Each structure stands twice: as C-alpha cells, then as structure tokens.
Length: 186
Image 1 (cartoon, rainbow, N blue to C red):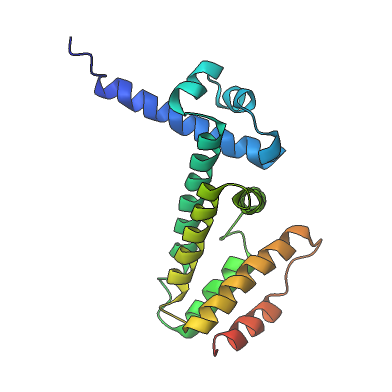
Image 2: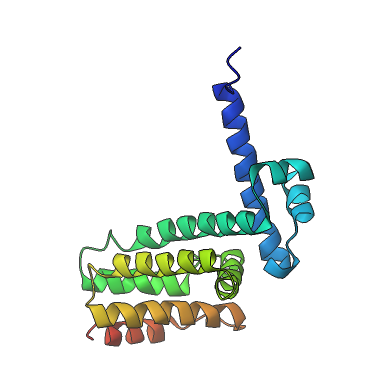
C-alpha cells in the first residue's frame, strides 16, 4: 500500500469540501456572516464538525472560499449575457435583463452579495475577491462600451440590484433601458 488516496477517495473528499462550501453559502444567506459557525455549516452540509475542520484551516478560510465560489458562479452568469451581444443595442438589452430579471441574481444571491461586500470591509482576502469580481464585470462590459460608460453602467447594475431587493415592485424596464442607453454614450 502506498498511502496515497485512491481516485475515488480523492473525489469523495473534493465532494465533501464542495458540500461544506455550498453549506457555508446557505448559512451565510440565511443567517449572515456574523452568525456563521463551523457547527451550523457542518449541520447544513450533513457532515461531522471534525470533517469541516479537516478540510479547512479555520472558519475564515471556509468563508473566503465560499465567497470565491459565489464570485465564480456569479461571474459566469454575468458574462453569459454580454458576450453574445453582437452590438451596442443588444448589449444594452443584455444589461437591462441583468438588472431587471433573475438572470443576474436570485434573491438568495443578492443577499450573498450584500454579505460579501460587508465581509470585504473587514477581511482582506474577501476584499481581494470583490476587486476581482468588479474587474470581471468591467471586462464583460468593455467590448461594448467605453471606459467611462463601463464604470457608470457597472455601478448602476449594482445600485439597481439593491433597489430591486428592497422595493415592493418590479423595476420599470423602460426607465432602466433609458438610463443604460444614456450612460452608454459616455
């Protein structure tokens, strides 16, 4: 026996680590970062508390890697809309869909975004993830809009998704489209 884990064993360990990260996101979404504990994550993942500490050095690492998973997932969704747009008008429509529809973020994902931003103010690794995410958003917009327009549109996407979370009514697509169209000329 060589002492090396089998391929199946390594895959199970990767699956368990991934389950812990997904559970961490679930706990963060329902309880907030400030109420996220090893025990709650382990319970949500359906693993022993010892297993969660086996895979990760500490709770900060779990939270950081869970947020890295969120950023990767959200970036893929964000980038899926914009590259397919052949021109500026189609890019504007893609941005309107991102802001007004669930294509960009579900309510759960929006909650996780808010938690990410709050955590980033206190955790340098999460702050770095946030900066990377902003850069990814900017690069998805860049083929369609100028530098100043990218900055303004990206900020508007973030701001309007906050409004979408807390308003009791849907955003007016025509107002969103008019704002994006106006900003696209910057």
